[in-house]
Length: 351
Ligand SMILES: Cc1cc2nc3c(=O)[nH]c(=O)nc-3n(C[C@H](O)[C@H](O)[C@H](O)COP(=O)(O)O)c2cc1C
Image 1 (tube, rainbow, N blue to C red):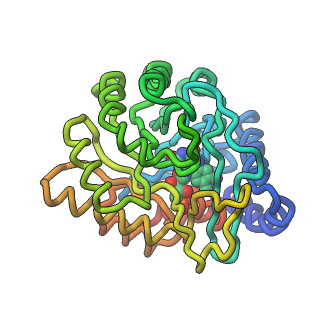
Image 2 (tube, rainbow, N blue to C red):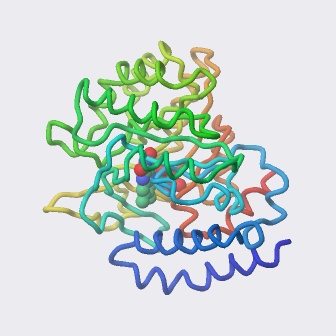
């Protein structure tokens, strides 16, 4: 059962150095190559034969899913991600309208420190086309989370209608049982011309949650995607707002704009200004400490919300650390790029 998967994982390790070299200027090309390769597997119905393996037979003692950004437009067939080793598939960030995002390149890889910086700016094909894509996969049986935010530049009532539009278009799709509002993207244009909407999102959080909770079905969960750059005051405010709404938990965390020079020796610049959110090793410590602040608040107020850990989780030791800090789920993006799909099999054997 594992022979072809062993070959697949070996192949990833073998071609990685050459692919990294050839895509150094625009690392998104490597991602597109991987997606196209996976697309061929699902088109030819070979995904089970090639990717499935013994580690998929027993679930690990935590929920394992891809992090948002890896499958922005839902272009990975859910079965491919399932056989790779994920139990849940996150799609997004989805915006109601299509959006181009920033001009490429918008990602930089730091291989020596297994970190990345991205300033993609929420590019996407829009909720309508994402929904059509997900409908086309039929009866796959894999739980889906929709990570979403308003189309950049929208403000006030327009922003709220945008969120409403995405939920309405996706809530009846098969296996969509969770929503993850992305209030923590550090790279989006605000309606007022700024490049970081995180503070604005926090100010609008109450109105956003009012709309989201009205539109999301009661049997579907809502998890807020949190910034690792939050302050204690942000955590307290978020928790206070969230207590008035039907939110199930938090996904901690997104990328950080605090570029630690140990991991990001030279930050990407656009028009002479530092850009981007750092992920992988560069976000691990920030991410863990914010997760701990949320867990502390949870205990203080006796809430039963759940925590999903994401950010630089690239070893079993780090999984343990995040579970001990209260997480019941783990998400991955950057560690998968550097450690390859073999890492998913290792993670699934965690006991
Ligand atoms: C290239 C790239 C694109 C991303 N796009 C999104 C996104 O669209 N929405 C989102 O909520 N998070 C996005 N993220 C953040 C990840 O979901 C994750 O929170 C962060 O990278 C930390 O996890 P990691 O170290 O496992 O990558 C993106 C990350 C990367 C590297």
